[in-house]
Amino acid sequence: KTQSALPQDIIDRENARLMAAHMADYEALGVRLARVGIDIEHVVDRLMTLEVGIPSWGMVSGGTRFARFPMPGEPTNILEKIEDCAAVHQVSGLTPRISLHFPWDKATDINEVRDFAHAYGMGFDAVNSNTFQDQPGQRLSYKYGSLTHSDAATRAQAIEHNLECIEIGDRLGAKALTVWIGDGSNFAGQNEFADTLERYLESMKSIYAALPHDWRLFIEHKLYEPAFYATVIQDWGTSILCAQTLGPKAQCLVDLGHHAPTVNIELIVARLAQFGKLGGFHFNDSKYGDDDLDAGSLNPFQLFLIFNELVYAETRAKGQFNPAYMMDQSHNVTDPIESLLNSARAIAGAYVKALIVDRKALKEHQANNDVMMAHHCLRMAYETDVRPALAMARLRKGGAIDPMLAFRATGYRAEKAKVRKARSAQGGGII
Ligand code: AOS
Ligand code: ZN
Ligand code: ZN
Ligand code: ZN
Image 1 (cartoon, rainbow, N blue to C red):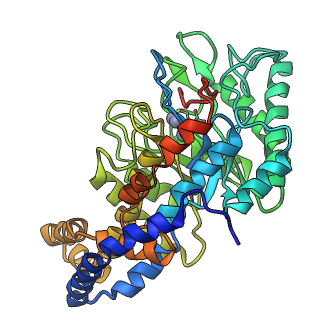
Image 2 (spheres, rainbow, N blue to C red):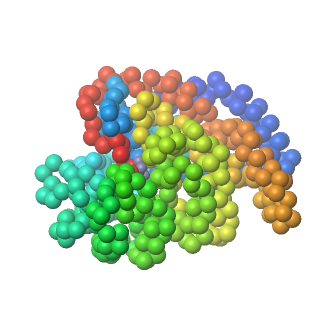
């Protein structure tokens, strides 16, 4: 029997309180969808297959360059982070895996970490390497780059770290390595664009060669920061070129906050999917840059349009389609657990709305160049209140009709504040 992070009796009590209203709402939505030829049960079944990974670095209060405001009861080590992830999954039913970040999550006993997670029914998503900062006692500095550094010994050290991440990830049961580097330049002339990319590919070839046969290598691009003049892996163009150069296990990871504000991210998603190079996502939201805000909290329509592309890509790919969905958020002013619940709801909602798009009608409107009706098709799906379908999927997974209310009702954080010693945890997602 799996262990629970939250008292299940309180969740059950909350569900009982909301049950009658939920059933009435679910029935009404079912009738509504049936009218346009959609079986709500089919939608709920599909939703129940959706899984989104949680970032370990998002479990503690994050920070900006200016400050970090830790909250009482936040986790102080990797085991406590896993416990909080399990709490998120228990009520959301959507987040069964945690994405670790090394060396932030380095534990002396990796088997203990694995067994602890398994006891809570939790697994591991892609592992993340970190060569964008120096660690205490590190031999060579990444100040001027890591995988692309001008010095071969520094590159070798960065490669070695990635190999260690694969090794740890393999023991945890992870199936992918995500590589994001901050390498680039802050001044024109600092280095040559072609030379740094060449060195990147050389380094990545060694990492690729060490992947277990069923692993994937995710290349995460980002337009700027910390390199403010030119970043080596700055966009999906460079990312897909590298992924194609490296081989089939290499794919592109799209972090929604890693694009200029006006960029059409759903179009990028469609392009990557069409060429079999969409590896996965770091879901979050942003207004200015790499803000790492809660997914769907600012641009829910964009999130829907992304899922609209994903659902279409899946139908085109005929079973060959398996992007890894993960969140990458930094929670500065909210309880991380509540922010992750907030995002899980937005992601599930975007997926369901994409599922209920009348694709047959849409195709017809597109063929007839009926622009307004094609757009109308998307709007009708997007504007549907799908919350009862989300609640039903959660309920059937043993979760909560209303995860936020259920979590609050447990008083989890206040309880943890009594037992967890406050300290400034590392890896608060400052980047
Ligand atoms: C950095 O901007 C990226 O989003 C990476 O995914 C990074 O590893 C993560 O945000 C943790 O800082
Ligand atoms: Zn990211
Ligand atoms: Zn980022
Ligand atoms: Zn981030």
